[in-house]
Image (tube, rainbow over all chains, first blue to last red; front, side):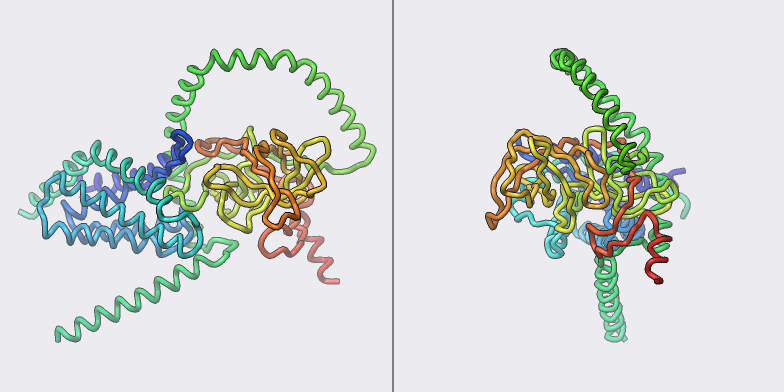
Length: 174
Length: 303
């Protein structure tokens, strides 16, 4: 049961992202703020940290390809960035402590890096013309705040779910 | 031996990089059609997405209802004020309509306004929001084709850029794409024609360019699509002029247009299939091929 729960949560998050994206952009006192939901990659980072780096990279590749084909139409962007972020997360955690607060911070920082790399890429191919300060103000900051809120609400649930799977696996092995 | 292993890894990495760049540059080209594996993925994800979209739309619907319930009193006041004008306007509209029908019969002209509506539901919006795109649950099997106009009850939203059998992709009006133009006209005392091209990010308004400088265009006037671009039906509302100025070279006028459609929460849209001849002229290759009657076009080509 738990075995199938992990991928199905990933699929669910993948499908929910665009629904949340429809609520964005929001307008607050004349300023436009873009909130980019990054639920799936946050979840994958958690898998990478608490479960298995290799598994997370595989998931990252799979969903990255789906994301590229379905939404972006530029193949090879997310399908590289997602596994890379998972790999980084899995590697960082070997050095430091696995407390929930620490992992949350790492996840948010990694998402910020992801956003920044994407901005640089789209700036390079002239999909966007907004200057860096504008990007930081109207995109990166609101996105980070929104995703931090999301992690604060659901981070413990991810951890609980993944831990259940790890325990189950340990029992299977023994 | 470890040296060899290390080299192998480096070579693998390099090959991967080359492959990646090739893949990205392949998909960045101006493609008109999705490849077969892409279509399969798009359709599969699209079906799953539309299943998720239904409850999600339902929930946002509830929130919208609550929101509109809170505004009921004010809205009612405003509507009552308008109701007085309504009877007069309706009578006038009826007269004009019958007159128009008679004239149409006389001239046997096909109206640029006529279109076959296809109802569609928005199943997703590009989550990273760099490109302004939405995805609809109707595709080529429902009769959707590339370049069709997409609108809501309030006004024009965008046009179809990519079609698979069960989904279609819409590029929204407020895009940075310089090739994206809509032929529009201002409904003033005298009709003024121009092109909607570009979007002002800071003002959050569309820019209408190439308006003849001899014509007067005023703030508050309505802008609708003109149907002259060869793709969109005529008379679809686009927005309202908020500011008029001259363009960069001072030869023509340009105006800022506040879009009438609300882009932030889109749920149900209408895809407009123009009944009159559609010409492949306004965008991309500009071949001027008659898309409505492909048979005829090829026959003419053979002569």
